[in-house]
Image 1 (cartoon, one colour):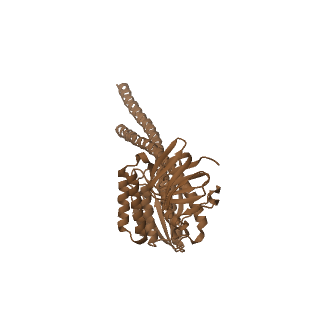
Image 2 (cartoon, chains in turn blue, yellow):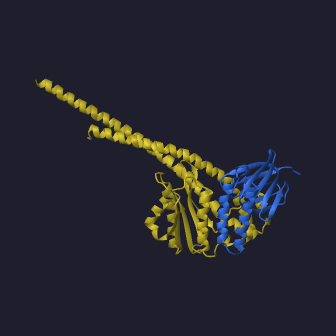
Image 3 (cartoon, rainbow over the protein chains, first blue to last red):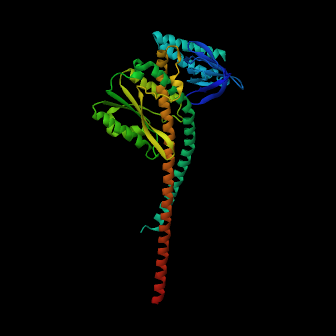
Length: 130
Length: 289
C-alpha cells in the first residue's frame, strides 16, 4: 500500500497546495471524512470548515467556504469556492461571508431556508474555531 | 508644397502620438503578463471541474436537471457577448461581435428568437446598430480593475435567474481565446444546457460514491459550472484584449516612426529647396549688375 497520495487544493482563482499527502481531513457536507491512500472513490460537497492535510513537510490547514472534493485511490482533489491558509483567514473575512449567508437565510423559505441556516451556522462555527 | 512651419508642427504632433502609443504598448504588455498569470492560475480548477462534471453527467444520463438536459425546446437563444470596456485594441472587439452577429442572423433566419446579453461596453455599442431590439441586458465591468471569480458569479447568477424565469432555452457565450500576442481566436461556447467533454484519462470511468446523492451534487455543481465557464471566458478575454492592444499599439508606434521619417525627409528637402532658391536669386541678382 502506498503511504502517500497526490493532493491538490485549487480555488477558481489559484492553486493553493499540491503535493504528496498521507491523510486529508475534509469537512464534507454530510460530515467530516478523512481520505487516506487507497480510499474508495468518492465525490462529496463541502461545508464551510477547516481542511487539514498531513503533508511530508507537516500538517497544513486551510479554511474553505464550500466547494467539493473528489477522492480516488491515487489522490484527493479539493475544488474549493474560496480557500485560504488558516493563518490568513481573519474574522473580518468570515464576517463578510456570514453577513451574506444571513441575508440569504432571511430571504429564504422551506428547504432553502434550512440550507441557508445550515450554511450560516457552519460559517459561524468556522469563525469560532479560528 | 506645405511650408516649413506646418511640416515642423506635423512632425511634432506625430512624435507625441508615437510617445503615447509606445506608452500604451508598454502598459498593455505589463497588464498582459498579469492577465496571463491569472488565466494560468485558474486553469487547474476549470480542468478538474470539467473532469468531475463529465463523470457525473455520464452517470446521470438524460434525465438530469434542466441545466444539463435542457428545457426540451430550442426556440429561444441567448447570446452572451463578452467584449472589452475599452477600444484601441485592434480587431479584438469587432471579431467577437462579428461572430455573434453571424450566429444571430442565422438563428433569426431559422425562425428562432434571439436575445442578447452583453458584457463589456464595446460590444454593446457595436450590437446596438443592428440588434438593438434583441438586447435584454448588460453587465458593466468598467469599474472592475481585476476580474475575480465574484464577477463571474455575478454574470452566472444573472444567467441562471433568467433561465429559471424561462427567458431562454439555450445560452451561448462569445469570447476570445488567447493563443498568443498576435493571435486571438473568437470562440462560441454553449453553456446552458451544459456540455462537458469527457476527459481521456480513466478517472471518468471510475465509479464514484456520491455524498450526498448524485442529484443533489449535480444540483449544486451545475450553477458553479456556469460560473466557472464564464470565469474562464472572462480571463481569456482579458488576456486577449491586452494582447490585441499590445500588437495594435506596436503597429501604431511603427507607423508613426515611418511617418516621422517621411515627414523629416520632406522637411529637409523643402528647407534645401528654399535655400537653393534664395542662392539662385542672389547669384542672378549679382550677375545682372
